[in-house]
Amino acid sequence: MSRSRANQGRPRLRRALAAPSAVLLVLSLLTATALGAGYIARHVGKRSHAGHHRRPGRAASSAPAVTISPLPGTPDASPHTQISFLGLPASEITDVSVVGSRSGRHSGHLESYASAPGASFLPDKGFIQGEQVHVSALVGPAGSRRSVGSAFTIGRHFNYRFPSRKPHDVILSDPGVRSFPSEPDLHPPTVSVTVNSPQASPGEVFFGFNGGNAQWGPTIIDGNGHLVWFHQVPGADHAMDFKVTEYEGKPALVWWQGTIPPIGVGFGEDVIYNDHYQPVAHIKAGNGYHADLHEVLITPQGQAYTTAETLVKANTSSVGGFNDGGIVDPLIQEIDIKTGLVMFEWHAFGHVSLRDSYSKPAKSPGWPFDFFHANSISLDPSGDGNILISSRNTWAGYEIDHRTGQILWRIGGKHSTFQMGPHTRTAYQHDMKWQPDHTITIFDNGASPTIHHQSRVLHERINWNAKRVELISDDFHKPGLLADSQGDDQLLPDGNSFVGWGAQPYFTEFGPEGNIVFDAHLPTPGESYRAYRFQWEASPSAKPSIAVSKSGSGVEVYASWNGATNVASWRVLAGQRSHLEPVSTVASSGFETKIAVGAAGPWFAVQPLDSAGNTLAISHAVQPK
Image (cartoon, rainbow, N blue to C red; front, side, top):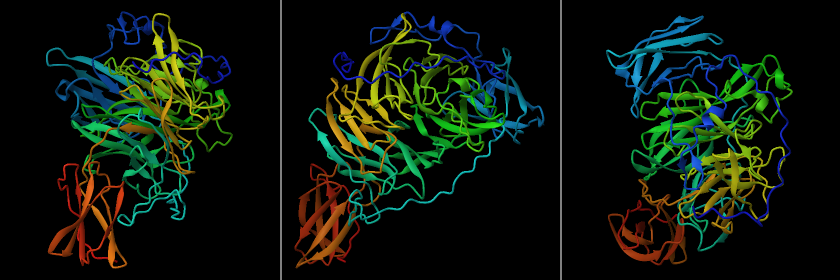
């Protein structure tokens, strides 16, 4: 990769204090946990682009060809769970038996997935909190069927009092709030660009604005900070993880929107818009959960990987909590977008010990212990379906076997499978992502509480032969920033790195040598969970907008087209409503173009033109106000 510079001579953060040793708590309900050594032996034989050995693929295994979720040993499945059979078509899944230890035998039916072989058994009634559930089925083609089974426990709900939601106030007098005569209902944030060099990558900047005095919502700007598209989310909702994806073979936009209570996780849904800014899909978490803010990942096949949270009772006395305490248990769901069915579900609780957390339970019995806090999902580039999950509160990443749910290995934290080389350890990190060359990028917050004196972005590789993590590079903002939450690092195709600083209202693009080639900031107290740069082309389905006001003997025309990316100029039409003629054409000047016109009208309309002079659309005809 072009961004594989040596790190000598570059500033580095102080390393975190060595983590205290801890004994791994083995949970009795877990039937499928593996902690690395046998799996690391498989990571040999194939060289990655970075010059280090990479495992060649899935080793021979006696595991079944079908994956049943909830996974075996799950200690806190939902009372509303479906039973997912992933890996075989529904026609090869028969004699499904689902029996609760208290609720008895459950009738139901199978529904097939649209994106992959498999089906979910949908029980006709729910389960009872705390009961054991046993599942069995015959799978395979007729004549060679075999028995498979699983057992899991239904969690006990932890009663957390959610605060009331109040829409935030938009303060129009704040200079950080934009207003447009042609779009009077839009009040997005002002973005200040301080660096925009020729070395910056092409494309627009994408972020979800929250926390400030402007309206909140997914936002696109160009490299000069000019607004391209803004969409206000409803009520008291937040917008998170706004980015470009591909859906049904076409470019699309995806983001999360919902509510964020003080415990710091989200309850909402993921939304997909097409390149005409029309909603084409809503992704809801299954099994009675709500999609969490931290990640949504769309696959070309039509699946969505998303985070969700469940609040359940658990004994947290081993880490200073309560015998009948509560935890926030993050889970990863693979959703079949077309049907909304759950294909795969993994829970951190039961796989990771509470003792592995660097956080501590609250002193209040009414506040759940957020021991893990999953904040990113990344699919292994080898194509084996395995998943890299970042845990903020254990300072670690976990490679999860997509077939069994077992932890294959851990990077960082109290029980790293690998020796962590100099300056490779993280604290409260976000956005741990695989790159195509099998290296890993990370946004290392270093807070909260403060462990490092500034946040940074890391690029690391795993040396499989030496079982060691090595630093490729680390980058810092100048002056330094310390983000106590959120943040991301997007590696761009040209080797540049685009960084959103999370709770700090900045986004920065670094060149391959670590030089800053783009830097911008939002108005305080605004922030964005992540920020990205993508090349994006779109033609809105809505008509262009126009406003006209009298100015002396003429008028001033304001023209905009929220989300359009190919408008080079604007043509003003004037005359009778049934017969408008061109009176002026001017170059486009950002989101809204102001045009002085001497014509009397009395009706006016505008047409956006592309660079070749082609008419793209026409607004409604209006009269001056």
